[in-house]
Image 1 (cartoon, rainbow, N blue to C red):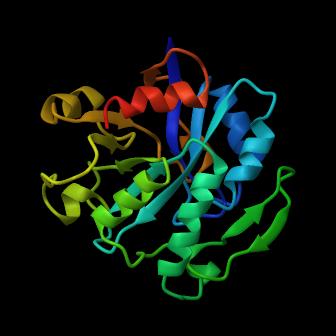
Image 2: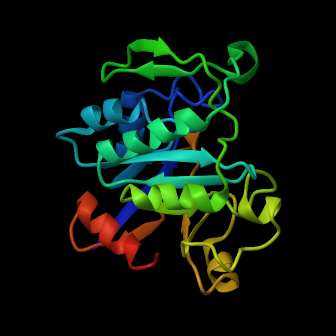
Length: 235
């Protein structure tokens, strides 16, 4: 069966995310857009994932725990995980590798941790929008060590991407899944990178950019296990 997805969505926790990117707004917009599965992938943190999962409970949509990590090469990598415990383990490691830079909300935006009612629990003080002290391969290994799937993000973009910052796909890259942004043509990149599986997600930082019923993954059932089984065959 086809499962329509958007595996790269930011909440109001990401400083570059709009404050309107709350758990309820994200889930409801995703349902309006007829998506079957979404992933919450804030910058170097997963503190809003659980709230989104709670909002989606009982609704016809799957929420995949995720995170977007910035490596020391300033490459963004999306990590998708089968459960909340795994992504929290990764978050703990990242927090220890994230330099202390105080966030300036007037410059970068707020970093709100929200509950399932969209109420603000707290605002993170340490800036999330920066590199962790880990290389690209170290980040991918960390994701894999915690049962996750590693996906170099928006490779078509001129910044914070593996192609922009390195100039090529390394031969020793320990993943075969790559992501392109909503701005590029999926078929073009699938033809260009035939040795890789290319997915396309929105990288939404505001509600109007959350994906529509367009990109799909072939799965046996509509659940997280089937999503990971489908993706792992490409890794």
